[in-house]
Amino acid sequence: MQGYGSRISAGMHYNRTEERNDASIVLGGGYTSDSGQRAIYLPDIDAITHALDSGDPKIMKIWERIQNEFDKLSSESPSAIVRQERKREREAREERKEMERLAAQRKEIIDTLDGAMKLRLHKLLGVEWDVDGDPVDIAPFGPDYANLRYDADGETVLVEAPLEGLTRSWQRFTFDVTHGEWVLPYEASEIGIEDEINHSGYLWRVAA
Image 1: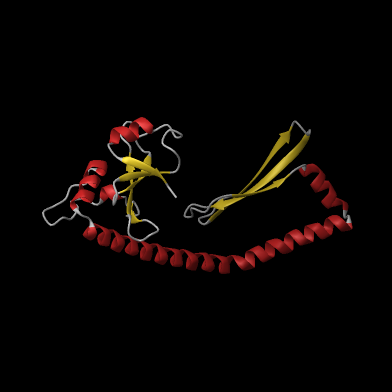
Image 2: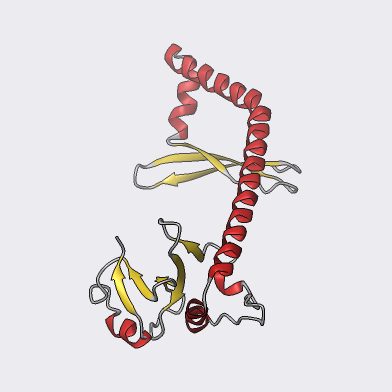
């Protein structure tokens, strides 16, 4: 059964391994909702229905608890929706602030780059610079600007850059723009990129 905001469906299948009928109830979004699905599984549905019909006190207490929990679920749902909306709004604000911070940091870094550092970025990322020393396109630095950043010392400029010669073109390694050397997680020979590093014309060091 499906409405505009929600959908509920029930299913049953024969479990050949256990030789019994198992069932499930699935709740999800309707025509105008993109809500995900949640399923309640009912193994051995025949035994469950027979037990409910038996009037056994223990079974009836379990059934009563199930109904009470669904009542709680229903009463808490509006508040939960509000809480999640507020959480998403907070996260969106924090993300905007972080984007602004990164953008400001990128601008600050670019303003301090000397000719040698700009040449390294051109060689590694293809960054073109205009007559004022600004990048013609910021795309090489990544959509969130985090690709161009300060190291923990707040002075050394780092960037993620591809290493020419690798078959995995999407793979990036950290490059120290300030000192002109790769910053690797392990020895170059240990991760199988020694030839590519040497071909790049830059030295390397293992990250502290």
